Image 1 (cartoon, one colour):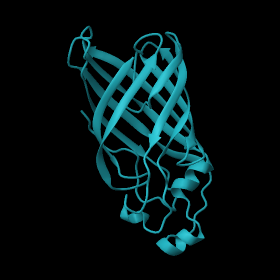
Image 2 (image 1 turned 135 degrees about the vertical axis):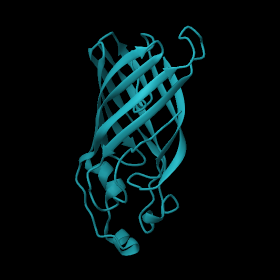
Image 3 (image 1 turned 90 degrees about the vertical axis):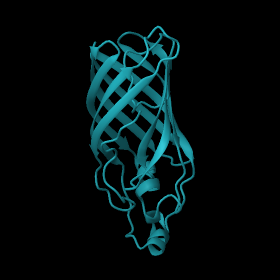
Length: 223
């Protein structure tokens, strides 16, 4: 089991250019013990099938609500209620130092689309308790997601001044991320403290409509 938490600066809303500080838990539970690698990009998950090569199971994600009070650029746009995403995940260890992870999640309440996250991470322990990792990431979403977060209908266009926009599904973000993870206490101690310093750069396709910022993450640091 991996249970970690950290404070991070993140965009105030999907597509926003403004940031806020928020608390992010990282939870990964399985029947086979602690996974060989976990990333801050992993959503909370429970492994039903757990071997040295493959971990697979259930994954979920919480989605906060979004309205005009979240960001001034959302004035005139419809509220998006808080909700979540629920689905499955698979971790494949291609080698002892390379992990590929895929998540497929169905939106609940906030949107009715499907969202898929794909990431590949190479990792190595450069010293006892000190690990370096890096790799590419990509997110794909169906129109049920993009319509909720980026679409602008006629009434919203009149209220906000934005042009009408009817987005299809597609790649919503892509980029790369890296991390340095330090285990401050010996692994045999029950309370393990992890400090992760992360720098990542990502680019999101410019889809118009509710697109009010660029980049999914940019030079984020968390501890």
